[in-house]
Length: 427
Image 1: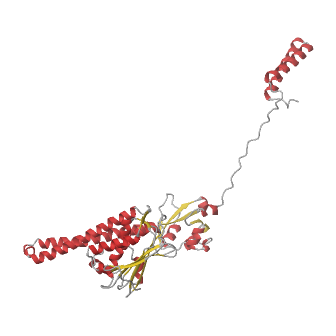
Image 2: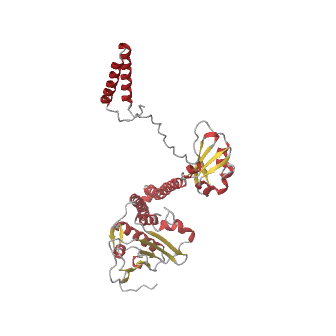
Image 3: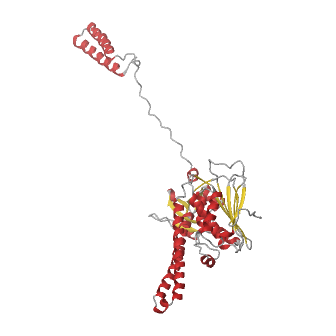
């Protein structure tokens, strides 16, 4: 009957009814009780103002929808490295990275068979420790030079989570750092020992008084000191190039003009074999986006190597052109003994020399091609070495053209050498 009214209204009406019953019982006057009842109900309706509002029925508690729990396989697939779930010594789950490394057959196998490594077998055969253990280093898993860290974590119901992390890059970087420090120390120690030895010899009264001996020793000391100076300059240069490798050069550099500038510098310095430099330049080549000083350093290094290792009296050819893809190419070719194929992949390693004795005698530091490679990488270009034993070596650098330059409408080709601009090169 009272379902159409609000809670406060029902309460007020109930109190009025109780009051009316009290009046009837006290006064035994039915008429007064009815008047009190009707008037009280009306007053309650007016006072509450909720006669037209329904009673709010209690709402059931809201049920928050539960997100579906992801399957275990979906969870481990989200991990980038190889992950295995092991129960009672058997592999129950493995993500794609794990099967790609160890094979698709590992699910259901004994984990010591799945990860075929003595270090892994020893760790996985031991019981779970109450305290966390460090990672186990695995060398040669997957490939001979690969380094992995194996982490084993206990899970529910006696399961284990085996996670493999590839540390090959970190080990390679550390090995390069150690090798670099060792090689640099060796390269500096050798001339320094020579200088100290000759100084000690000149300190002797007899050797120091002989002008001819003194002059010869002083020249050797000077050459060794210059060698140390070149090495330190190359190390500083390499460090600067690496520090700037993420800054893309954006200035337009005319390589034809730069080749002529470098050739003139070598001629003015009366460098050995500078007259053998021959330039075959396509003047229609667009400018490249680059660092002029670093591109000049590339040319000095490549032309210098060609003059050192090419046969005397043969041309050192510098060629500039654009390929069909729009890349600007510059090559330096010599006619020397060439380089055996097994040495080519390592030519850009720091301090790597095909013939260490000959390289040191020629004044090389072993860093020239490493510097060239890093400069080319900074310029977002490519670097290629082609060589034939007994014929010679050609080094080619490919660089992207500057975005705001284009080749002139008429492209001329000019061939020059150190003596005359009228000599045509025969290829």
